Image (tube, rainbow, N blue to C red; front, side, top):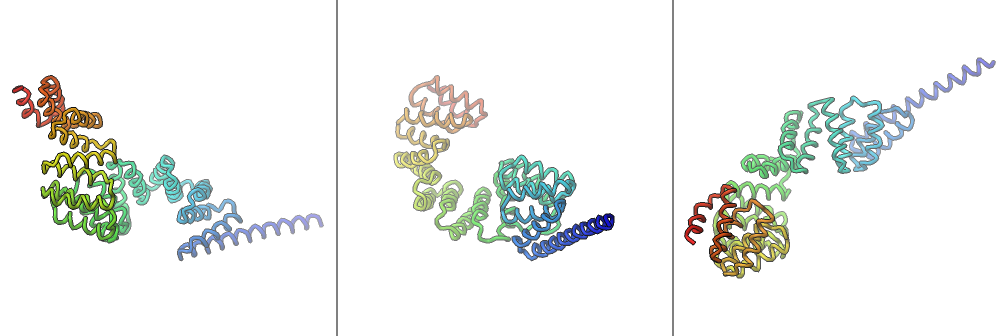
Length: 378
């Protein structure tokens, strides 16, 4: 009797465990179906139930982590993915999802470690390269970013339709002065999303650097159509007229539009000051350049331009104060030394004028020959 009772209990236990296992599998499969139907929250509930019935159900923990990432609950995603990793340590996608959750929580060292682990298991895991590229992009490590982007594109199995990816690749190429390449990628971005203002701003910038003035102005105007209260495209058009077309009066019209949108905007005040200096209106320029510096106390170019304004109205002490500030902010600043030399010549201070020329010589400046003649003639 006792033996039969023990046997019955054992069989019953096995049946219950088998039923639990079957229930867990059923719940998991239901979760997969819901996930495929984009019902992520409902899918997550099924995966959680499955994992609660079967503590070593690593697939359920992984899927729970995926869903939690999709729902932006990154901390809980990490908890589930770590459980999945216990049994699925050689499965690349577990490490990718962990990396993604860490990245979203700005735990970048952990994110990079997880992405690298993913790639160690599967070197052509395209999305890991993409995310590592994004991390490098945000750190302004553009060489590393482009390397990962190239690997991402090589490994991608389908057409890359992510407008933000192409925008960022275009942005990087603008930053490293490959403006033609930048336009190629930015136009791809525009093709996938035609109302993203930053793409038009970068297209305007690239076109301006390529001296494609009409295109640059057109892109900036399209940005204005998208966001009329954004000061950046007005500044961009002002810069095209100021630096490329050399129409300083028209440039000031656009800088004023930027100031109408954002009264203290530093680049617009600088642009106004620069144009006013070019037009010989030095005292008016001083007012705008002071405003630019008020907005950004480390604006080296504004200090140079303000020093020039003071030099032109014979206020030499104030000129030198601003030019020296520019040199302090940028010890390779040639323009500040150039104008400082002119001030010292006006003051008949040959020693300091020669000092400035010597510093320019050390910087291999093209201005040395001209200035040296002036100093020798003192």
